[in-house]
Image (cartoon, rainbow, N blue to C red; front, top):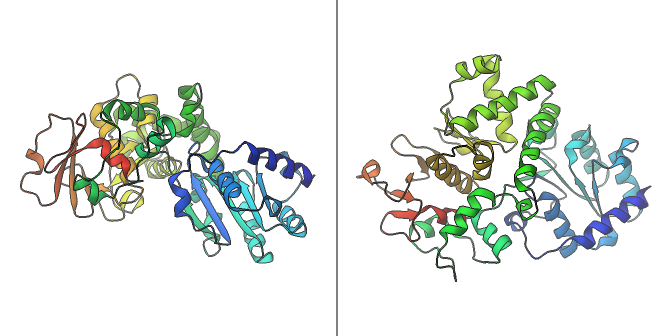
Length: 390
C-alpha cells in the first residue's frame, strides 16, 4: 500500500513547476526537524512544500502524503513513519494534517521515536484552535502563510518582477515598479481577484464562495468542537460583517441577531479570524492577533469584500482592508486614536486622492495614504505601494 503513496507523490512532483515561489519559502528554516505550516485554504501551502522537495531534496529519501488519502482510513500516521524509516526515508511531508484525528499526539510520537526523520506538516490555520497544537510547541517550529501580496500577484499573473520593499523605503519614496508606467489598472484587478493563486484558474468567484463555505461549515466546527448549527451561525456572522465593514463590533446586538449567547460572540469572531476570513483591528500593543480591545472588524482581504459584499463594496473599506492585510505580515498594525492605523511610530490616514491632510496635521511621523494616485510626494504615499512589502 505504501508503494501507492510513493506513486502518487512522484506524479504530483512531476507536475510541480518552480517558476514562481511564494514569499514564505525563504522565511522557513527548512533544517528544523519538525516544521508546521498553517494558513487559510487556497493560499498555496501544498505547492510550496512540493517546490521545496523538487528543488532541494532527494526524492528517493522523501515522501509526501495528504492526510485526506484513503490510506489513513485503516492506517495510522505513526505506522507510516515507522515503515518509511525502514525504507531509508529521511523527509516526511504530511499535507492537510487537520484531516487526521489525533494528529498532534502522533506527530509528537514520530518526533520522539525517529530523531533521524525530518517532518513537515501543513494544515488549516484553524489548527491553532485545537488544544493539541500547543502540545507540539516544544517540538514543531510553526509558520503562518497568507495570500498573495500585490508584488507577488504582479509576478505570478503578469511576470512583472520587483523585490520587496521595507516600510521605511516606501515612506521615503524609494519603492518602484520597473517598466510599469501605470500601476493602478493592475492594482484594481488585484483588489478584485489577486489575493488567491487559484484566481489563475476558471470560475474564481464560485471557487472562492465554496472555500468560504467549507471553512465556516466544516473546518471551524470540526476543529473547534462545534455542532452544525453553530457552523451556520458563523456563516450568519460573516454575512453581518460583510454588509457593514469596517464594522465596530457590538457584541450584544450581534448575539441578538444570531440568537446566540453574547459570551460566545468574541470566540466566534476569533475562530473566523484564525481561519482567514476576517481581521480584527485592536487598539493595544500586540497587533492584529494581540490581546487589545477590538476596535474594528474587517473582512480578511479585498477579494472577500468584492465576493461577499459585491452589491455595493465601500471604497473606504476596500482601501483600509488592503492596507491592514498587506502590512500585518511584517508589522504590528493597531488602531490609531487620531487616524486610521498606527504601525510602530508611524500614523496613517487612508483615503481617496481628494482626501485632505487635516486629520494628521501637526502629528509627527504621520502619512496620508491615498488611493488613485501613481506617485507619492512629501508625506503622501500611494496605497498600492504598501502591497510591495512581502
